[in-house]
Image (cartoon, rainbow, N blue to C red; front, side, top):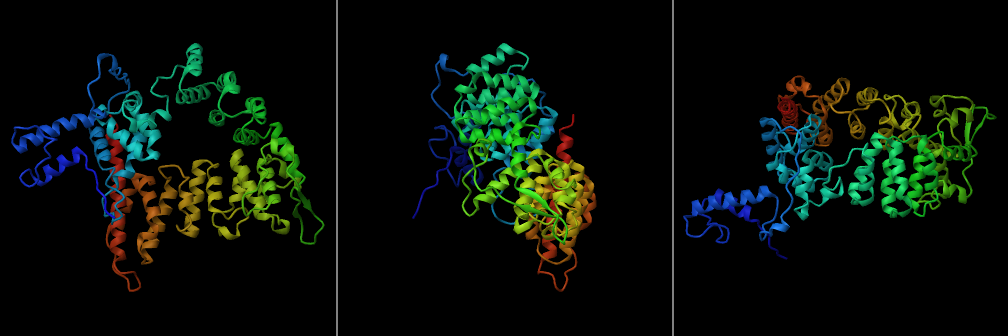
Length: 538
């Protein structure tokens, strides 16, 4: 089976320029007639350069009444020249990755673009107008870039996105190209809320919520009964920001919503408020299922009596009645009750013990994994650092024998509830005790750049892996994280690892050279990151 590959006019011109017009004549439709080929090629390249920068497909000229409005003013300061050139380099290189071949020692510029955008936004710079098309193309291709890219593109980027159907994604995730009114301008806020596009209303509610949570709740209440179910769900999800007991009456009403997804989200938000009436109802239900048995010779034992039915009240409070395939109904209901109950329920219910003491208690009839997993979800939902520490256990304890959870996914979520410095210290000790093979997921929740103890632990573990004589492929994920997350100050300490070590008898053939190359790339990436940040400083 054969097919044809379409080539853009720009690519045709580039090919002719690279091969030379004597070897590859530009297509007749792309170059002006009556000129020598080299001159015609340059004229055509100039024309297509303007078209590419304009970000609009060539089309018949509109009449005066159809012309787009002028681009809005962007008050942010312009980028320093060096930073503008760096952005152009990063955007030009974004399509060169992913070939599947050997990476070599050069930095991967594609992976540096998100960091560059985040740093530029922190400085409050505006995007260069000539780079807006390439920036929007990059954001279209990579969803992970969109929040930072659209923030950097600013009002001009949204204005430009209206003129190209391929960039419509930009209008769905922001204010739709409109400048949001000040949350203090009640009349303008009400007008946009009543008349704006959905994306504008989402952005408006988020803006008001961040400034005045109660004003946002009142605004939402004015139109709640008439909103579509999918829109109610999106608006309700915005209440996670600044969630407080003042939101409880509204959320209680949402428990009777006609949409199951809206009811479930309202129940989840209420269970994150330990003082709410729903949390109290869930605590009573969960406590009736979990008890302490002191009658045994071996000491206290947690006993479980899972629910025998999922009644109407449970379902109204967000308990999903139908268990997933392969899951028992009673364990499914029990997990939902425990994860929605305030964690303060358990010390009083289980003999006044601390969370650390509770998670070490034996549990009857193989219910321990179900109970501990539900406590993990509760600790994450309620942001309870004390329970998270108890469920994580000591970082040096083997995961399979820890007191709380053995799941790395659950551990990473628990770590996210801890202060960033404590989180980095815990992961550093975990790596020192267990190496890097199980640390990738845990590293992903640590603040960037990594704190010094964590960075040192990662580098030491990579050094140990290199000395073991294996290939670096199995550590490519951690090495990629290190390129993005290590402090640039670590570059000088890593320089010694860039040399090719002497080949050991039991080492894999050529492994030392591959490790040397990987460390060279790491060092050059860290130094480039330092340079990028310096270029953004005025």
